[in-house]
Length: 182
Image 1 (cartoon, rainbow, N blue to C red):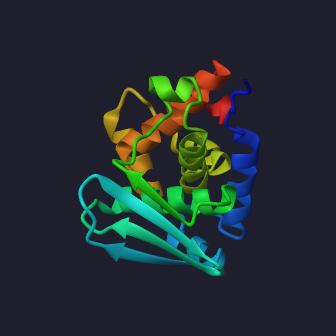
Image 2: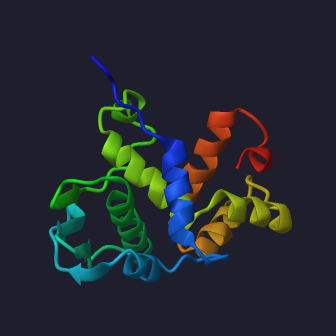
Image 3: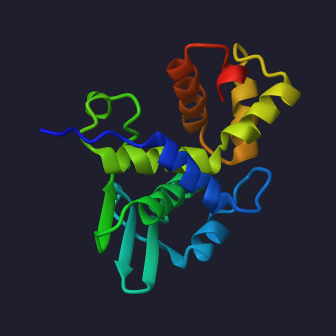
């Protein structure tokens, strides 16, 4: 039995392609979606549904829960763009409760590769490693200061949790100095 594993290199390359001429945060996720031919529509969804990707022929619609915070909506849109850029097939993909699979038991066993890849794509799109590395070098951030994480998250228009996960996951994978591993 073959166990599928996330292709982080492919995810990073697709996120870089989606960024095209963008050079600084925050990433305009609406522009990225439009470039990929997707229309983004806020909608009154139940609390446990963050986003939906609908594809039919040339039509692509990303539906995002209008009741979620702006930073969560941005991550949801980036996540659905990830499904669009990475995964073919499903006409409708619904993300319920929008779990972050980087740290739970399912992610370590790669049970839900599509979700892991879409989350990784969103992180790479919204918080590109090169941009973070430059900011970490120029801002001289002290991570014992909670305000530093808040400032960095604000700059990228992501939640502090998303920023902390992005920084921690890069550090843990490399097991080395944060600035050197991004």
